[in-house]
Amino acid sequence: MESEDLQEMLEQNGELMVAVSEFDQPLELHLHDAEIGDETVRLRLTDGVLEFDVDEVTGAWQHTHSLADLGLE
Image (cartoon, rainbow, N blue to C red; front, side, top):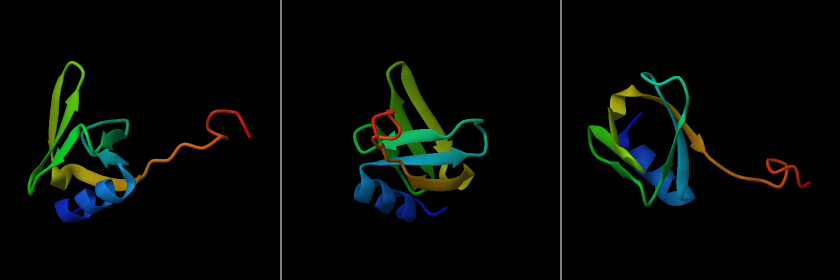
């Protein structure tokens, strides 16, 4: 994926899920805790910083919450 595309998706939605080839689970990025550079993504966590190459991102999608997610429909 292109860093510009990831940044645009993050800015439009406020949060973004990304699949990264080196991790088994998708990662959740937020405007307040993620920095997307030309070559790397930095994700600030409560106990450190996770950094990975933009080239390792294999997919990205809007992360939403719904009443159904919370069992409240």
